Image (cartoon, rainbow, N blue to C red):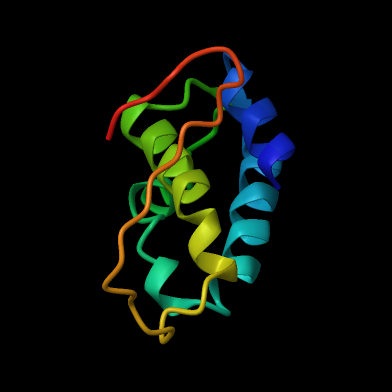
Length: 101
């Protein structure tokens, strides 16, 4: 879904059918985690008001909703009921330099 969304966002003009398919794929994923289902509102309104155009420019706000959905993807795998740790840790993964916390 990440690759499909990235491809969609790179298109200068978007055809209606692929946009509907991508939104449907996202809805299928998001139905299992309702907390993430807030991602698409304007995209569906945009599809509903498509008109007779074969291809349209994807508005920036609709593009932002797809990016928001990508950012929410980790929440689909996360257990939101897991206890929160009181310990905060930080590390420097660099083998060539130092880090400060």
